[in-house]
Image (cartoon, rainbow, N blue to C red):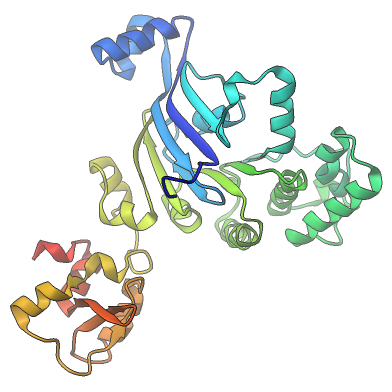
Length: 354
């Protein structure tokens, strides 16, 4: 997101402290630097979110990832004001949602924000079609339009032919797809997805992740996706925020988080993640000028790749010969990847650690 773009979602220094003495506790945190345990002991308050700031660009899939109790679900519930912050601002399209009156808030929730939870909460007495169309019915949309929109959204999630079924006749994965169709039926600007696939078995979960990514490419909805699974965050997210004890400890692309973890906590998380499809040539290459200074001109006939080629692609090139890989952008050599650079990248060390 460039500096001139307005964020679709922006959180600015958001705090949420649960308890009757929340304001006192926040003042003490700011003046004395109390930690969560000290706040609980002194004020009987629980710190849910601590000074969280991030922005989400239009059309971006932004994953918030953390273990149970990290504050991720508490944070996402501020976006549609299911929870009021103790301090800070939450902006949707530049407007502070906490400044809205009751009617304006209802309108934003109905028209701008769709939610998909871990448990879909489909109404058991309504058909699949009527569940999907419910938000439109509540807005007074005519029946013919409701049916047309609901059936179009069910087709998007590959549930055509199931419109007349009841939720109890569907598998867990199918119910979750109905929940996604229901969220999309209102055509929201923003999708909030709180661990939507975590209750499903691994195979169904992966299939739904793939399907969601296909949908995201078509819908281009700004999405906040909550998960406790780093593998899922890496598969789904354009960027990831990692939370611990209510704080956002790092925000970055999957590659940035894998190659440059902000602290030991993040490093421990990423330790077991395969780097082959996440780390690019630009992260492991030596600048061409530095290579020429120490080795002279690269040998003739080097294989070439672009700066965005991943380690897996570079490995395929490397095993076909014994020459380094020339990295080329806009017709110019910009870097070089030797076998040693490649192995360091796979192992988890930057080429600049020579």
